[in-house]
Amino acid sequence: MRNLKSIIAILLFSFTITFSANASEKDPSKVTTELRSEIVNILGNKIPLEVESSSSEEVSFMINNKNELVVISVDSNLNSFNVFVKEKLNYKIITTKGIQKGEIYKMPIKINKV
Image (cartoon, rainbow, N blue to C red):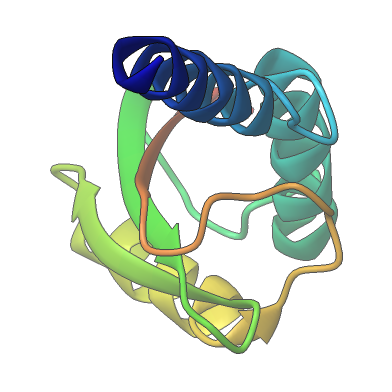
């Protein structure tokens, strides 16, 4: 009888953990797509930089507990792009739901020559 109670308790505990882990609000790929769209809206379509050729840059950021976007690093050879991204994005409020707070996100940005 004692073993039966132990087995039932273990099964209930494992089911609870399994269902709580699967109870996410949204699909992670949909959340990151929404987050990317929101960041693109903040940055705008036209970046006021003069570049000699098209290039790809990468921005690493995280969302803090106040739903503010915090730029961690900008992987770019263009110093003016680094400054532009940090001024536009740092500490802007993000409204996308389902974001993991404290998780580092990386977003590629392509700069085209005009």
